[in-house]
Structure formats: structure tokens, C-alpha cells
Amino acid sequence: MNNLAAAFKPKSLKLTPQRIAVYEMLKNTKAHPSAETIYNTIKEQYPTMSLATVYKTLKTLEEIGLVMELNVGEGNFRYDSNTQPHSHIVCNKCGKVDDIEDADLSHINEAVKKHTEYTVLSSKVYFYGICPECKTSDESSN
Image (cartoon, rainbow, N blue to C red; front, side, top):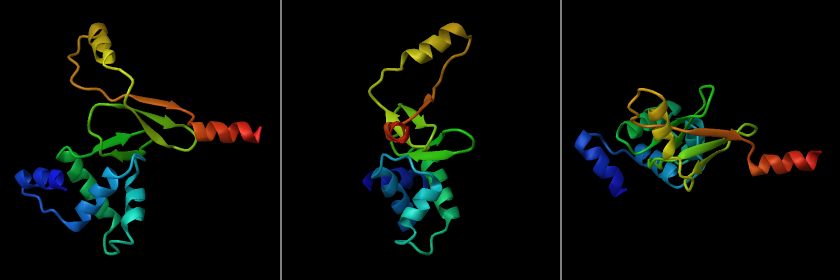
């Protein structure tokens, strides 16, 4: 919470209970939820909060660097409170998104720089596949 207050203060942003709830929900999950999932998770606790408030809060949290918006394809946006550089893997069947934290992919930026005339400032890498749960489900149905 101190992290949140410290990020809001220089921007003169109001730290509302709804903003705290959205941020805390993201901090306490590795599931990379959508705005709708976040809304459905906290709406009982905050019945007057709207889905629009969740979207606005997520945008604010992204702008101040506390969350990362992930476009995992076809306009499907998910959110991650881990803003350290890391890649993601997305299940093509169920849509689950997982972090890839231990794989060293730092060479990708250098490879792109070597093969283009761009100065690489950042990168977001997404892998797509079938998660273990869906793979097991597919194998048991055959």
C-alpha cells in the first residue's frame, strides 16, 4: 500500500478505496485477469463500483507504472502487477496467461538490433501454446 500511495502522491491522484481494491487484487494474483474478471471479483465488496471505474483505474495504474497491460491477441487485454521485464505464454485453448520469468530472452533485443537499423527501446514477447491443464484434458478425452 505504501508503494501505491508513493506512486499516486507526485501525480496528485486521489487514493480511493476502489483504486486500492483493484491494485490489491492484481498484486495478490498471478492469473493476469481481464478488467471484467477484476470487476466480478471485487464488485461484492464494492457494489457501487462500475466496470468503467475498473477500466479507468487500470489505465491510471498503467500510466504511473504500477501495472502492465497485456494484449494477448484479438483485443483480449489482461493485466499484470509484475512490471519487471518478462515474457508471457498464452494458452490457445483456455486463454490462461502465465509469466515466463526464468528464461533469459535478453538476446532477442540484440538480435533485432543486429538485423535491423532500429535502436531497440523495449520489447514484449508472447508465446502461444497449450497449457498443461488443457493438454491433460485433451489426452483424457482421446
